[in-house]
Structure formats: structure tokens, C-alpha cells
Image 1 (cartoon, helix red, strand yellow):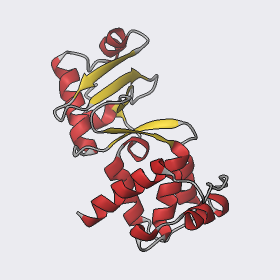
Image 2 (cartoon, one colour; image 1 turned 120 degrees about the vertical axis):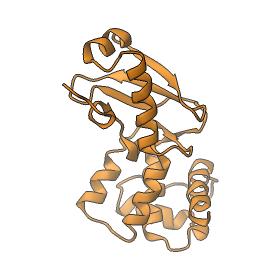
Image 3 (cartoon, one colour; image 1 turned 30 degrees about the vertical axis):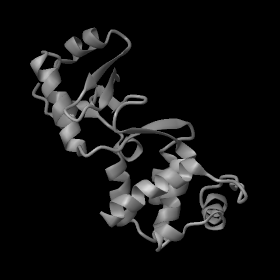
Image 4 (cartoon, helix red, strand yellow; image 1 turned 90 degrees about the vertical axis):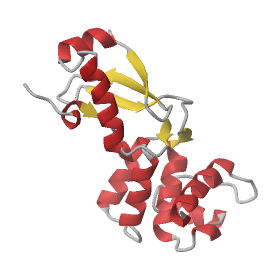
Length: 184
């Protein structure tokens, strides 16, 4: 059977690729429906690693596919043997490290950014949900405050409110990432 890079590589880009999230926010501006709600819920509730570098989803998949092809690991049985019930890491052209795993499905090469890799941000899923939901509805991203964030956390995400008296550096850092891209 002939495979292409998109046939065998599974990558949850909404969860692990910052530019995909940014494009999603821009596409879904002021929109709230079941699809948006499901996308945000797909982020889960634990921590995740988000790639913040310049490689597109297709660039990432092509580089990984190229490595697998050159190493004769495209055939599922070869890949399974190489992974050996665990995972492997691969460094891409921009210095980012990617974790490769095996899944028993058609897209058997499961990839995500490695923890603490170059161009990778470790973030709590609920922080990312909060930021994405807030950015969907706030016109001026520079003027987001805790009260506004709490409105969306409580009413749309069913999350507990954040303390308005405290600094929330993780939320602030992620919002700044999106502001920088929007102003670019």
C-alpha cells in the first residue's frame, strides 16, 4: 500500500500548534456554537506542549515523513519495531524536538512537540481554553482584564473564576503570544 505523509501521521494541530490556534481564533471571531465548544473541550484538562515556531503543520509532517522514509520506517511493522512499545524523539530543521509514538490505527505515527523543546510552550489546557475563548470575543486584545476573563471562564467554559487580585502570568504570556502574532 502507498502512503503519503498525511496518511500515516496523526497530529492534533489545534492542541499542539500555536499558528493553527491563531488561525482558528481569527476564523471563529465572535462565534460560539457546538463546534467551537467541542474544539475547546478537545484540549482536555491537563498540561500540553504547544509548538510556537515557524514551521507549518505540513512542514512538520513532511520533515518527519522524510526521516521515516530515509530510515525505512514507513512500513507499519518497521515503525512498530523501531518504536518498541515506547516513543522516539526527532529534532527538526528549526531545532524543535518532536515525540513520535505508535497508535493502532491508520494514522499510526502519532506526533507532538516534546516537553521543554525549543519553540515549545508548556501550558495548562484550561489556560489555553481561557485565552482562546476570550480572544474570540474581545475586540481589543490589549485590554483584557480578569473580570472579562472570568465572564468567559464561568459562562462559556464552566471553569472556576480566577482571582482578580492576583497576577496570572501564564494567561498573560499566552495572550501576549497571540497579540504579537496579530500585530506582526
